[in-house]
Image (cartoon, rainbow, N blue to C red; front, top):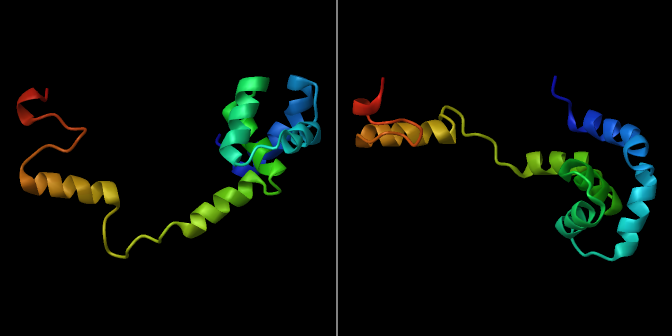
Length: 115
């Protein structure tokens, strides 16, 4: 069953000492001292130098910046424009345009090739 970002963060923090021998806080401190400017740089540093997974590295890098990854996701959701009412989703609009133009949508084969 998929977990929410908050549950994932809690699980990472809970399992980190058993997997790496360091607590979440002990990972955040060296990232802050590393002096890397952006979150992607921090994530890449954790992945390359310490062989952490991308999700774990993202949670640690966001925390080192003073924001949790959960805050990042909520902010991104707020910035995303709401769907226009009464209109189909973007991928559906694209399929309609292709169908009206008489050409297959990107995932469809031409009728001659269908089984």
